[in-house]
Image (cartoon, rainbow, N blue to C red; front, side, top):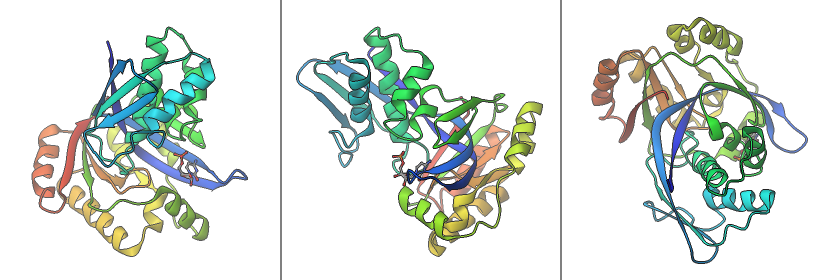
Length: 283
Ligand code: C5P
């Protein structure tokens, strides 16, 4: 099948441990995959790799991570792809902390591995993925996982019990590199209880995970953005979420719910204060 789905991710926790000599940061993040997804359709023929999407402002050339992934696959395997058109139906919000671009790139790698018969292992595919972006190795297989190093050192975790996520994307986007720059300049007040989250996952304790959702980037947001994020979190909790947090470098905030009806009611309430909401469940 010339089609592949690319799922969004959310951070249950996000900790920045320090800046590395290569300019990146060492991270410790518990990640989860949700069923909000883009669809990629592949057509062979023509010249070179071209990407098009339903969002005309996204790049169609190497600036698109999907095209970068195809180029990286070609370089690493020596397999000539010839002409390839990738059409992406975007549903995952863009620049939102939900790994939309990284997930599209990972979907391209999975598709090419299958279609060309390259038969690369998950590890080999992740090695290629890390040349495309820090979140791409996680997106190759997704699931509940601990991501360390730049994001490429992955440990599978016991799956998060089935639950519902209400994602709320504020109208502003946040620059990832600028936010990492803020982290370097500021002293963090609090860190996530990553060990506690791992223990709660081990015990299948959804409420224990929800209580410990935490992202250090919330601490270093610009004041206006910080107020919007805090306000959305408050509204989600008031509406019945077991926990609420910003994902990645934002600006999406989500609430975690144990029942779909509660998440749906919260969506109705949150719609007034947030234009873009997505109700999804973990994959
Ligand atoms: O790897 P990726 O291109 O997705 O990273 C985007 C930006 O995020 C980097 O240029 C860097 O500023 C920051 N980053 C970081 N440490 C990481 C991942 C990303 O500093 N582990």
